[in-house]
Amino acid sequence: MIGLDRVQRDTLLWAGLAVVLAGWDGSVLVLELPAVAQSFGARVADISNLGSIVIFGAIGALPLATLADHFGRRRLIAAGVALFSLVNFATAFVPSLLALAAMRLTASCFENLVLGVVTALVVEEAPRARRGQAVSALALLFGVGQGIPVLAYPLVAPNWRVLFLAGGIGVLAAPLIWRRLPEGRAWQRAHVSGSTMRLLAQTPWRRRVLILAASAMVGTILGEPAGLFFTVYASQTLHLSPFVISVMIVGAAVCALIGYVAGGYLSDRYGRRILGAALGAVTAVFTGAGFISGAGGFVAGNLLWSGFASAGTPVMGAWSGELYPTRARATAEATGGVAAAFGGIIGLQVVGALSPLIGLGHSLALLAAAGVLSAALLLLLPETRGRPLPD
Image (cartoon, rainbow, N blue to C red):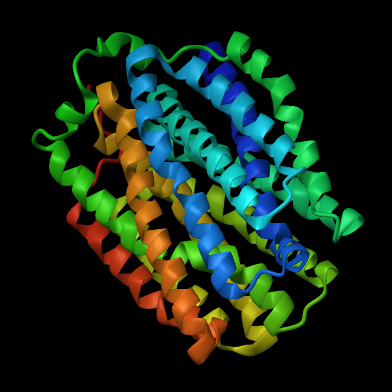
């Protein structure tokens, strides 16, 4: 980004590398899920349980995030990259679906840690008027990380273990991140002391944390199962080939890239509140509609869902960072992840219970109402664009 000083450029570069690796880590299981299900003879209910277990990783990220508020951002980011990369490598050797779930639970913990702390760091270090664009740059890099396995998988499908093996490359990058990523200057000025959770329980932070947590929890009732099951739905219900699914994902990635850039720019220009709520509601509608409108509607809905959801990513990333105090920002980001985990588990279990009765697509479409409610809750929060970060 033009106009950044050397420390800001180094922060974006090395934090961005961590995000690329986290994107790889987070996308592999979803991409390979049909092959994984076939390998272990898993049903929809089994996959729902797998996803529910993996989501619990966000809960494990919460106590680790408090360390980032007390001891700094850099070391926690580097350690998180090393650990989820090691787990990625080990996942290639799992003998059962239960062992796979345990591995992905562990990886999810460190992936959520890295993403939350990186977001806090970049919001803190970015120029005040360009925080949304800085977070959109992170989102673009996360999309790049997600896109690498998408391009590679058709070459190795259905051998799903190969991409997990390759994910171990982050072990080599972690020492470079440890050495080269600058420690956050805002964090160094904040003089963190005492319990971060006790701080967040005070006014006005308590209300903000509760509203964002409620929105995240309700939103992932739709978002988590939709994100986990869309390749399964495309493969088992619509009978699309791995090649067609990969092409669809590439198309969605292009829409996502446009969305990331647009969302960051528009939120810096016009604000977070109305834009964030509107994007959330539109995303929910297109997500739900895609699962009940046939192959053509599914592809179109996936492209629109990807574009609007991605536009909302930098909006919410910058907004949540601006709503929290620096002394507890990483912890606060992690509390949202914990709330989202519980919402995701609810959504997955609902889909697992309803899909034998009404089908996978209709089960997912019903959850679109939760996505709209999540967006409406955001209107209870204040606008923060351009304001100084609270200490």
